[in-house]
Image 1: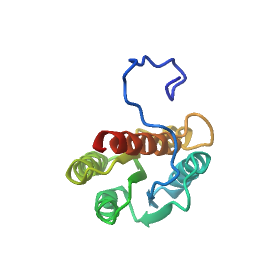
Image 2: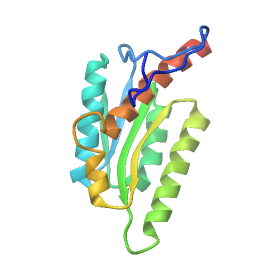
Image 3: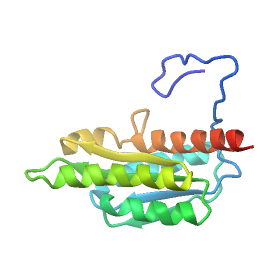
Length: 164
């Protein structure tokens, strides 16, 4: 077994690990459309990984920006989805806006996850430049949308095991 970054994983014999199998899971993928040249790539990566993992018709929900992701995540979690994938891109600018949006978005998504018990994968890029954002949203092994989708699936499957 290997980690996402390709390094070998250290696994205890009795460790519980979530499978990369989305069959039977209801998955919502939330995309912030602000910085869509980046978030479109994150969405493509997430949907590709979900398809490979056997997801059937994941629901894609678009919201204006990253700040709106926590509210949409809450609605999805409360509507019976087994996993939520939040995708967005917050790029550092000349004002404090970046700090507020990045912090509140991550805090809000974590709160949704802890309050509802539904995994909410953090696929929101918080980067210093558009170049960094593009590098993390292109097809391939560095696509953070695909990484978030994998985290959501594996966590949902771990929770199924732990709760049974």
